[in-house]
Length: 301
Image (cartoon, rainbow, N blue to C red; front, side):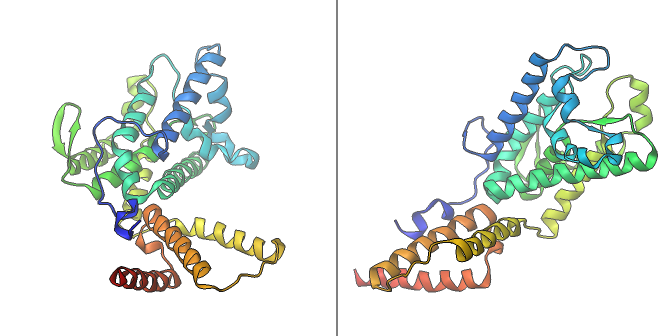
């Protein structure tokens, strides 16, 4: 297979039409959120002001700030959604629709694993910021649940990457940058006082704004979380070196070519998942040398 025939060299696409690929990070997140929501309904016998057995176990509460053994709630809260009668299914529905329609193109742009790292990073940071804020304000009874912070981060990354792409805001076709302006302004003008007066569940505006700020930093500061995977790879190589079998590699031409092809595939996969900026100088030099060899082989034929 030629280098340019591989998936990694295909142009970026924008996927807004309904389709389903069960192998994407977006599909995994959708299925997990929906499964937890359904499990909470099936397993719970709801009482007034009660979120259900699953939500109560996973959501983030202001009092968790003084309980380090519960700090894992700064991640799990993002996988449970409001189960109160006043909210209905709208809380999870809006989050999952935004993730489904806009998240797929963002995943295509950054790769499956980098997308997942962005999503989880946004969820955890938003949870930590909310917990610290409520701890400082002395609001231990407040609770946080929902994927809004992580989802709004993904939505803003869509806006930054595809600002002129036409999408539907409610029922109106608009360029994506209009959605970005709407998300920013709607959260800036929403006050806790007005929410309290409405009598319904309060929107965690601070979490939304934090999600927007993470997207801004990631896009404009050229962040990349590939180092997490690189650290994992370094650990595995070190483990093999110390504890793995001691093998002697015969340096013949055929074996060398197979090893180089395998290494090229690994690096191309890394480019596809994490972008060219994730490559080390050693990997860049290898690909330049490998490309020259491939061109030379073609000329021989």
